[in-house]
Length: 403
Image (tube, rainbow, N blue to C red; front, top):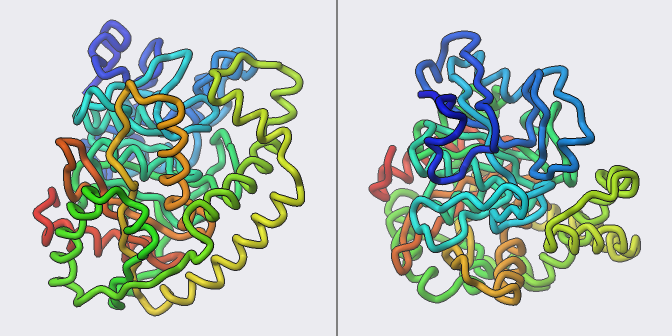
């Protein structure tokens, strides 16, 4: 597959960055031979400027001297790169909208946002333009678009895969991730990118993250409980646990504070020197990051340690958390700023649990609500990524999803 003819004229969904296609031939053969992939425009490809979703970023950065290891690993595994995909500028948002380059069109529900910040990668896969695509996830940037676009997606254990050669937002949360249309390919990409070891099966119980179920809209929870009941046939009756007595809003507040502090440390020098033009929502977040009170961020870091001490031991024996990936289906393109804010808080508050705890999370395209996809998440212990992907394949079979 190639998208180089007439630049990206074939890309009717707007998944790829404007300009000539960034293509690289496979560098070997292996598990991914014959497959095509795209990569979010936060990862370096030698000789190409990494645009990070913002024209001023592109204008102030030279072409990459080397290709990011995650991209090299996929090329060496036999896959061919066919393009770089759009991102929310500076990867700082969850809707998938980009003021400068346009918002990719959600192939499943064109009147709704695709989700972000890895919007282009999700759309490239959902539209069938590539077999799989790489993105990055800080506070849900793989999991949210996967849920919105009806895909399989994974946020791996923090630090499991190198982020060298990638633009960063909040380094202690950032991680590569990827999308596919089948569970087996999601696992196959993991075979190439993930470190060895951690082979223990997830043989423990299913643990319902109750606050996330209550946080979900009733029709979403009802649709996903059908999927949960099928998983219980595979793994036994699930156990309900309350993990965040401070509430989903409290989780969101702590996560947002730590993320903002890190974002300003990461991007502040460039922002001050360049004074870039930013879309209104991203500009507001950068302003909040600049103004973040260090005491508030410090409380967020303390909460992070508390949450890790609370949740990680529950998963150490092979248990799996299960809950709605997002509390609602993708918002409509006509949603108001107030509606987007409410969705962001309720959504990121749930996604932040795995981000704060450094846990691997897989989302499965389990159901639809009003014709729009909604995902079900599985979360395992740190380092159990391969086992989690194997369980996702078993779950897909039981749920009647593409394996």
